[in-house]
Image (cartoon, rainbow, N blue to C red; front, side):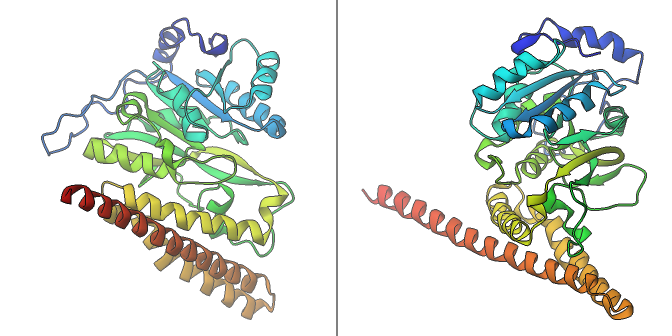
Length: 370
């Protein structure tokens, strides 16, 4: 059931969903959660559990994947209000209006171009208690949404994310290390069957308290993914909400909430991997520069570089020595090359950020002397 009107005009659909949700699950997301000890007032987190699902899209060439993503949301066993936001592509917008069923809302991105602006267009206007995000080239497995909503029962949880697995178009290349899952939009493998705390989740499979999302004005649009250029806007959002809500701003990863992210052939080339790693390095420098807590902003990345990568490189080399098979060496080499590309990207971005800061300081000093 997705009782939604067309072209973004709602007729109290969330009110209608409330009755259905009441018979499905418990009460609110974080009632009774601790508040920050700083004494600063923070907005109360909503307790109703209606879900507004958002799928942002921009490319007509991904129409088949988009329709699969939409269908996967409609087939969930938890009710939601589904909105598809088209990012400045009028041809795609008109095509979706003519092809999607009446229970799906299709709207234009009225904010800045990019994934952040498109998602904000729908989520900042939502009146549902929770907002779910799914990528246009991903498919949610059965039970995805219900698993995410149930995880919101944990005290102090403001948002959750599901495990994202790669859906290889032609199979994973022999040289591609599983530790580089993030390069193709997948989660790092984890054997846990239960939800566990994380610094951030990814917008490709995210559920967040709507009032908390709106309280911080959603995704930072200046740090937005535009087209295929990736930026850590989802990480920055999670950090900002956690900073605003303190002990009531925890994020959880929910492994049973599975999403399969399509990995086309062009993303299985070494050149793509190196470009993506470079972008990751530049994006993380920008993230640290604007983060409220710069020390914690890149804590996960430091652990990844100091523990995960050395362990994986060593395991790959050892495997090749034992089996006399080059696959392990190739995976280890890819890891080292990719980390090198990320570091070069970070160095370049760091120099750029420093120059920009110095330029601003000189301008400020010059105005003060006048």
